[in-house]
Image (cartoon, rainbow, N blue to C red; front, side):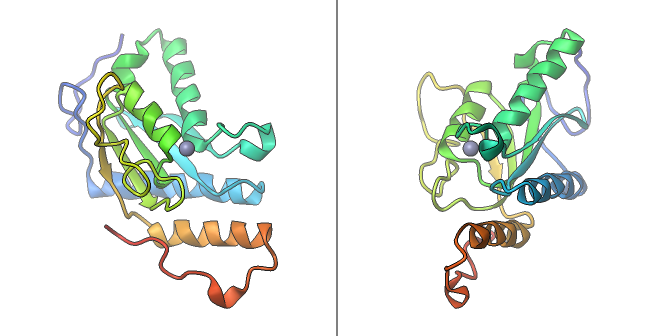
Length: 191
Ligand SMILES: [Zn+2]
């Protein structure tokens, strides 16, 4: 079992991060999203960071796997479990001190999974107006829902415009007939 005390992490699963860390990890998450875009997947990328180490990362794999639940977060969660398994570390201890960095607000399904795993902090880029589980459609992140894990903190708005741009590129490819002039400009803003 690995229990380290780091300045960025307080006991009890509370997780706080600096602006520098956010910048660094969101840059990496953006790369994951770009990789998704290049592979004809909805461009969402994420990282899970524990004790300043990437313990899981993912991008959407829905089309590749033909599995609608293979969102970036789900891919990363599986990697964290593998990481814990390799080290003989308890996943619940790791998840309770892990921050998620993701380019788009987690959907309702993923937000529910993050709650169940008791991940304390989610930093995300743009809002997810269609499926968002951190306030846009439902607030799974902070709702008072008994027996569904723990609420988690969200820090929205990092590199939101870039995240939206990638989504727009993807959906234009999907629908070449979409009138360009009607693409919404400010789908997502800092909140
Ligand atoms: Zn999701």
